Image (cartoon, rainbow, N blue to C red; front, side, top):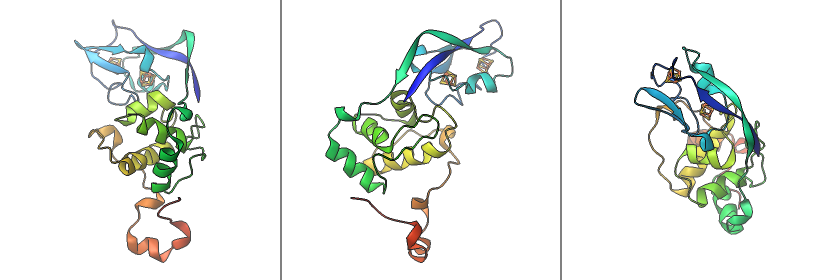
Length: 184
Ligand code: SF4
Ligand code: SF4
């Protein structure tokens, strides 16, 4: 769960439209239109990455008038489906996945079952991926794969860290105590 207190604001006088922010935003909230970065405020999870990456100092994080709460309602999805998807990924639904927002594996699974089609959708619906984006993203990808959802190609998601599920069969057999195929 995340209470989003801030929102990205672009100084249009300073923005040169180089898309450095767009290429890094985990929620797809900032996009360059007519050579100026534009923020879709209801998608901005206030990670601050656009502000950090902007060489023109064109982005600042402003306080929201109304903080935005992000939390996926797992009760809105059939619990058996959540259990099955998490089990396929070898993960427990109640496991906190995101160290930054304490989002659980079950919340991610539920958001995918409910129709998330990309990592950005998961970030906007659950808050996971709005912090460091290191530990959660590998698991988000795993759950998408187990759900059979083909996510769009995007350079943002290259070079993701591998998980214990990604090792070869040979290595998995050699170290069975560190690897499991499913939890059902
Ligand atoms: S990184 Fe800065 S200058 Fe570049 S498009 Fe984004 S806001 Fe504009
Ligand atoms: S989600 Fe992060 S990178 Fe995207 S617009 Fe908001 S603060 Fe910037």
